[in-house]
Length: 288
Image: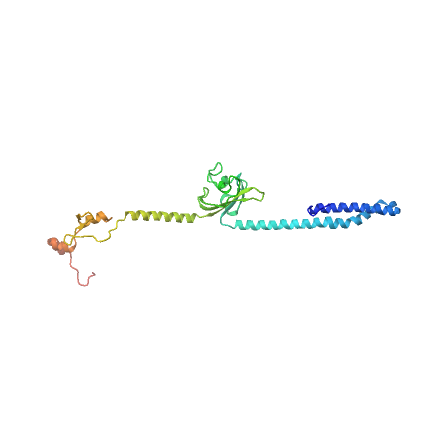
């Protein structure tokens, strides 16, 4: 007898078979009590079978199969719509999204952004499509960080890498997930951070240049003892130095020597007079 745990089609077939047996037993009983019916033509028996069994075949076999077929078709259409929506979302991302078999490294999926960079490499090894100059799995492959030695799925692994195909920097998120056929695969989502990386490198370069510049700067602070008459300066060791010698030693300043007009007139009056005589006088109203 069919049970509640039996498949629907099996229950329907067993029900129809049981009805056929019951119909045969019913016809035998009718012939036993009414021998005249036994002399009827065979097509009469067939018609009787058909009249009794046909409704049961329709309600217990054909209709359940039709409903099952309709439900299966609706499920397939729903799965197809869900699949298409998922592809639309993944193909609209400005990021690399791909799936690869952890054991064989076979690429199982590449979104549109990835295909625009690497081409349609589905079915090929990831190290052959996503990198250059590779003769085997990459030494920086993250598979060993996604699955433990016992085969258990670990958490997400985040890292940064400069791709060897286009030279761009990517912020990468890797995770092991079960695939639709039951095997374990690697899902990777990589966002281009080349601009951000360049800004960080420029910032580090500027900081290093500033650090070097500050290391070369010598700053004079505090009270500097200077002679009120000769203007010599006393250093930290008690020695007196000329102003230019002291500043040259304790700063990055260099000196060139000359004579100001006041000192020229005081110490070299004859030269000052010759320069004054050689300089033409300005006319009234001339530009100053």
